[in-house]
Length: 522
Image (cartoon, rainbow, N blue to C red; front, side, top):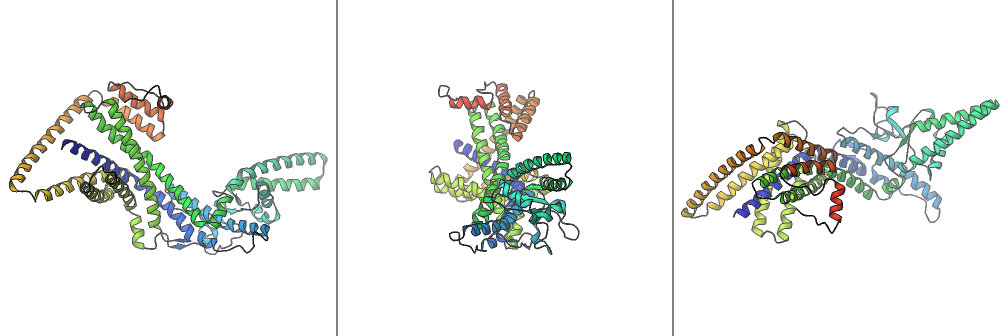
């Protein structure tokens, strides 16, 4: 009974950490989910969230077929392919820029000029992030995209040729493929250097006609150099966007979701590790665990929480983005709440329970019971997270506190209801006996709580300042990704508790793990 109770408490703590992580992930899921929505809208050409239809999405672009046969006229075929890929590059560039704007917490403003009323086939700009009061692209925030040429040198020849003269004369920003940008800059530097030498030579010779031509060419190249912009899209990605728009969109969505997972992973490690550290410090003091057992437990809990946080944010962002661009207004409304994060958490938590059932660790009855507890508690947690965010209007903090409170209340009330239903089936004598045992258990819990509080107060009376400084140091190291600093902080706590650290840096830890003659002991 006692062992089962401890397991239940540990499971509750783990799920409670999951609920706290869900609350903390609401902001991440919201921002990255909107970024996912931008890529979905770019594919379909319809942004249901904004109620706007773009001038052709990737799906429609892919339906414009190339007339030339690559086996009969390969030169013409590849010319048409690159031209169509250029249009696709505009759409991908805009979707990636809008995604970054959403991730940074801003309302996306970047659009293709073809999406602006009255600016289809704009004479100067393809993309803009700002329009004036009349709806016209603002020059300094707009660019002409040129995915032309088979190499950086050929791309520069086109930019400096007569077909692009109007863009240079208008001092437009010129956007080139991501994989061409560095090569074009190098080519510009070489040509500008050569022209400067020629200008100096012609000045000395007094050839004014040739000098004027070279100075004009130099001014043109310097203007191109000043206005050159690197696209977020490579030539290969543009071609893939035309030939396989579904694959291209899926890759962009996975990249965004992965970034959401990585960002939330750090928060998950901090929450799960912090809860585990506090719990294990108490266990060490009461003699229930050794230092080594506590360190191992914290490591396992931290890694588990980090992995769970990654999964919640990754899945939540995809769910949020998909729901946000749904054709159903009801689904779009739900996407604006914290529901996507909790759906992802529910999937993760229920998955853990089912894995235990299929592996034989729990039987069918225990599986059903756990699913009931988690379903009830996560519903409560989601509700209290919304309340907490209103009560504490600080990003992450309010939702996290609310979700933890909700889980505590939900867990307690569910277990009381479940126990009452079980007891209703018992005989009167058995009910009386169980009620007496419950009263004794409650009294014991109160006594243990008072004893724990007294012991903690006594133990930490002269050590409060030390732990405050050390915990703050460890927290800062986690936020900065300073592994050696984190190890140094935890080693301070180990020494303070009477232990001896086995390593003092990541390098020493790696060496210890790699050396078969020095087994890692806890």
